[in-house]
Length: 286
Image 1 (cartoon, rainbow, N blue to C red):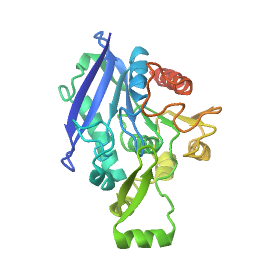
Image 2: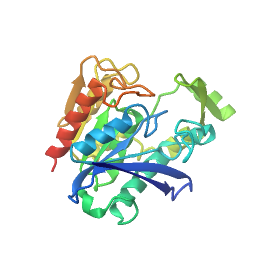
Image 3: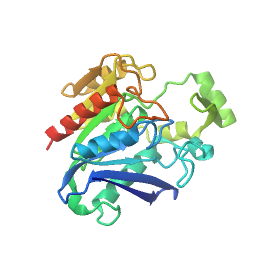
Image 4: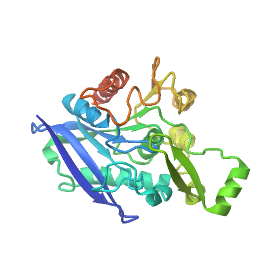
C-alpha cells in the first residue's frame, strides 16, 4: 500500500508557508528519493502530477513534490492559483531557496513525516518540468547532495530577453500582467523579478552553471511538438553538457498529454513513457 504524507514548511527567508508531500511504499527499506518541481503557473497537484507520484512510488522511490512558496497556491486553500499578490512577488532566487529548504528537511530527521529508514538520500534525484527544469539544473549545480537530474520540457535560460521598451514600461508601472489561459486570470509579475535576476545573475545563469558547475548525470526529456518551450531548448542544454542523455518524445506537447483537471486514475501515455524512462535513469545512478 502506498503512503501519502503531506507536510508544511515555512520559508526561512520570506516567512511564507508552503506545502509538500511524499508518496512511497512503507516497507522499511531505504529507497531513492525523487524531488519534483513544477513550472510557471503550475503547482504540485496540477493535472496528472498525483498519478506521477503514485507511479514513482510503485517503481521504488520516495516521490516528493512541493508547491513553490510564491506560486499562488494558499496552504489550506482551493488548491489552485488564488494569491495573485504572492505570485507577482515570486522570483527565481526564492524558488531555489524553497527547493533547498525541502532538501534540508529531507536530510533532517523528523523534519518531514517520512521515517528516515525509508530514505536513501545518497540517491537523491531532482526532476523539474518547464521552468522547474531550469530550477533543478541551477539547484543541482550548487548542491552536491543532489546525485542526478532530469528535466522535462525544461527551459535553457532564465533571461527572457524582453525588449527594452517593454522593460522600460514595466519598470515605470512596476507590474506586468500575463494571461492564465486555463482560468482567465491576469497574473501579475512585479518588476522585482527583473531586479532579482540582475542582482543574482551568476547564480541564475543556466548556461554558465550547466557548463561549469553541473557534475551530476543529466537526462533531458522534451516533446518534439512542444508548443510552449521549443525543443531547441533541449538541444541547447545538450550542447552545454554533451554527455547528457537526450530523450525526444515524438508527437508530445508541453504537458506530455496531461491537462488540469485530470480525471483519469492512470497517466496519459506520453507522461507514462517519460516517467518510465526517468525512473530507469535514476535507478541506473545507484
